[in-house]
Image (cartoon, rainbow, N blue to C red; front, side, top):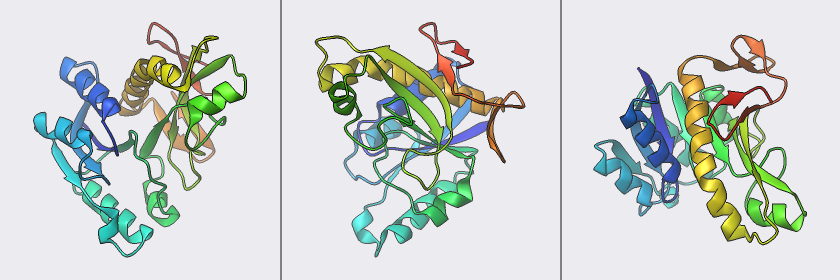
Length: 219
């Protein structure tokens, strides 16, 4: 079985989407643990209620970022993960730490990368006058939201959208995208090769695209 550890800082809706897909038998993974940097993150309760190990590590208990990151990933390693999923985990990881997990950590980000890395993506898309917004799943590297992109899903922006309405409409699509991308990783169809993302053994020149029927298509 393909072991997955999830990192989350907040409510855990993406973790819940993975858990639901696993429970339905639609996702060939075993969720082993939920780790958080917030002791009161609702995601922790979601995991505990599902019988999944849940652990919070307060960063203030460590002398610096690198020490915290080493401890966090040391705990993750105890669950022998084949993949670590950043699902609303609001921290940048020390380069030396994340470098040890090359190709084994992915992040879900609410923009069509490389547009709008970082925070406030919905407001930034609206301020730029974009007609299309979306979400991306990418491999995690030392660069903030800068790792190779695996797959994306698009969402038309409506004339009356606000950052809140845009975020709310995108959320369910984020969930579908993350589940579909993790499924491909679990099946071994997506890997991070020497020169970038590979899909079914071939270099992926542009990110895969998830359509409204939850079918992954070449970009």
